[in-house]
Image (cartoon, rainbow, N blue to C red; front, side, top):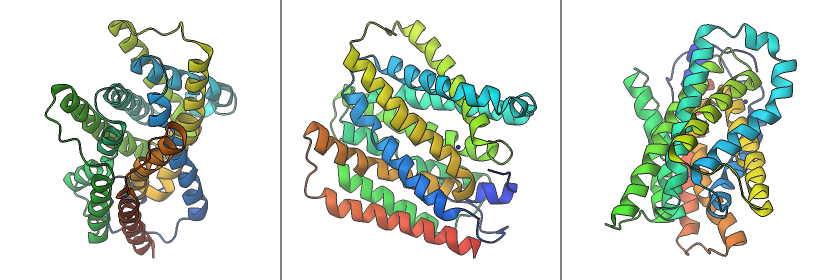
Length: 318
C-alpha cells in the first residue's frame, strides 16, 4: 500500500506528526521510489474534492461506491495471490485493519458532506490538518518528535491557512461543515496511524483489501439508514465516480498505504497537506475557480514545512 519493519522504525515516521528519534537503522531502501509514489498519491487525492463537488450524487453514496469499486478491483489479486496471507493474517493485524476501515468510513462520512456545507477550499484545508492530530497522538504515546517535525508541521499548517483563509462565517451550516471537515482530519490521523501499524507485518494488498472492504460495508449501512440513493444516476455521474475511484482511491489512498511503511506517518501525513493546493489548481483548470494571488506564496510555505519534516526524517535515518 513490502516487508515488515521493526515497530520503532514503523512508528517513527507516522504521517501527521512525526516519530521517535531513536531506533534508526540506517536509510530505508527504496526511499526514492516511495517519494515518487507519494507524489502520485497526492496528485490522486487532489482530484477528490473537485470530482466530488462536480458529481451529482449523495455524498455517502459516492463514498460507498469509491470503496466498493476499489474492493472489486483488488479482489482478484487479493483472493488469488494473497489468499494465504489473508487466511493467516493474525487476529491483531486483522482487527487493526478492520478498525482502520471503520475510521476511514468515519473520515469519508464527515468530509464528503462538509463539501456541500462549507467551501471546498475551507473543507479541504481543515481536513488536511491530519499532521497536527498525528503528532499529538504520537506525543501522548510517549514519542518525542524532533523539533524540525514540529516546526515543519506548524509551518505547513500555517501555509494551508494562508492559502485558503479559514471560513470565519458565523452561519450555522458553514460552521457545521467546518466542524465535520475538522473531524474528518482527526479521523484521517487514526486511519494513517492504524495503517502504519498493520503495514509492519501485512502487505499493502492484504491490508488495503480488508480496510476498504470494511469501509464499504460501514458506508453501505450508513446509506441504507440515511436513505441515500445508491443508483439511478446518469452516465456522466457514474463516469465521475469511476474516475474518483481510480484517482483518489486506487492511486491516492492505496499508494499512501504503500509508502507509509517506508516514509512513516510524519512525512506521509504532512505531504497530504499538499492536497489543498493540488485541489485548488485542479479546480482552477477544470472548474474555473482561480486561486487568489495569495495562493502562490502560501504554497511555498507548505512546501517549506514539508521540506523540514523530510529533513528531520532523513537526519533520523542518518
